[in-house]
Length: 150
Figure (cartoon, rainbow, N blue to C red):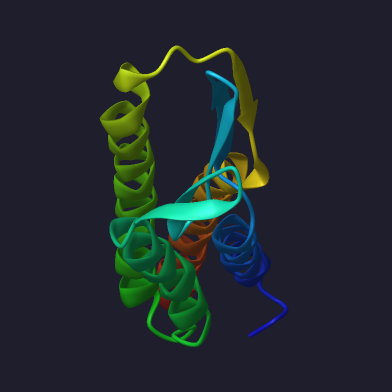
C-alpha cells in the first residue's frame, strides 16, 4: 500500500486539507476592524460574527476522500472516482470561499488583504489529487499490459 507513489500523493492531499481546515483562509481590514475567515467562522476583531457551515462540510469531504482512496488500493477504478470527487469537492470549497468573501466584502472598503494557508493548501491538494489520478491510471495500464503478457 505505501510503496505506491499515488498513496503518497493521496496522503499529501489529505494533509493539505487538514492544514486548510485548521488555519486561516483570508483576513482583511476595513474601517479599523480586522475581519478573519477560518474554515468555520468569520470573526471581527477576534469575536465571532458568523458561522460558515459549508466550508467545514466541503473541507471534511475533500479531506476524507483521499484518505478513503488510500485504503482502496486494490480497486483502482474506485480510487480514481474518489480522487475525482475530491477534486470536485476542492473546487466547490474554493467556490464557497469566494462566495463567502463576496457576501461580506462588497459592504466594506478593503484596505489590507492577507491570504492564509487555508486558501493555498487546497490548491496543493488539488494538484496532488491530479497527480494521484495520473499514477493510478498508469498502474491500471501497467496491470493491463502485464495481463496481456500472461
